Amino acid sequence: MEKLNNLLNSELISIGEYHIRVYTLVSLLLIYILTKVILWAIKAAIFRKYRFAKIDNRNTYALFQIIKYVIWVIAASFILQTIGIRITVLIAGSAALLVGVGLGLQHTFNDIVSGIILLSERSIRINDVLEIDGDVIKMQNIGLRTSRGLNRDDISIIIPNSLITTNKVINWSHQSEKTRFRIDVGVAYGSDVDLVIKILRDSAFEHPDIDDKDSIEGRLVDFGNSSLAFQVLFFSTNIFRINKVKSDIRRIINKKFAENKITIPFPQMDLHFKSNEAEIFSKNRNDASFTNG
Image 1: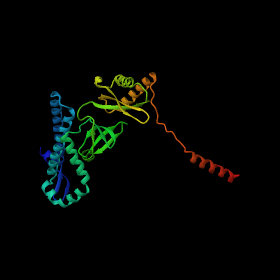
Image 2: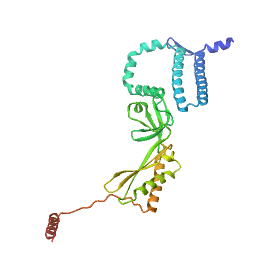
Image 3: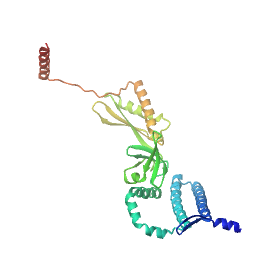
Image 4: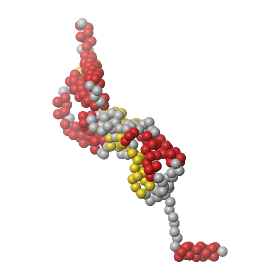
């Protein structure tokens, strides 16, 4: 026992009034292990409780993230106390330095505060589909400073949290799991309007990723310059890959239009020349030919 006490009291590092002994390292290791065990137990308890209560798993994730950060802050304070650094003295002695650091890292602090807001407010959650700066992203992780998402090209996007909280963000998954989409198409004047609407509805109805098929709607929305403008509207839960769904429906529409001899016109332009302009052009051309001769 005495040998163990001597081993624990053995001095490893000595810097002025601070002495790092073996038991200090052991204490730090125990604090780290205890913190990990507490977090594991809390995570298991929270996810088990919310799973039985049938509450959205994304809300559970946000709650656990907040608890994790709080516990790590408490653990860090214990670590500093174990080393021999008093937090109150450290903060008071470095107040001026913290002001300078705060000014230099104000964007970082803004991101951290934004991360806390996102986790506590829970307006944006894991697996939500967002539209940020014209890019559609599926959220994978919400961190304290940055969040990570996956775009439709399967590229991981790192997003500062302040970008989400201070800019306009469209959350396609906020209200419900399904969203309404539309496809625009123009057909030639003289086409059977009722037949076109029926083809549009039938084309969307055939796709397996369309939900609430009774709510599929075809519309004549405008009389364009060179075509009749139609829309087909439908609901789908496949929000993140909706471009693939739209492409499939457009192919079905194009096939049915061809079978029913319905044409999709392209813009055309007629040019009209006045007679005096044509004569001037012909005269200039003749003069140029005479000069070259």
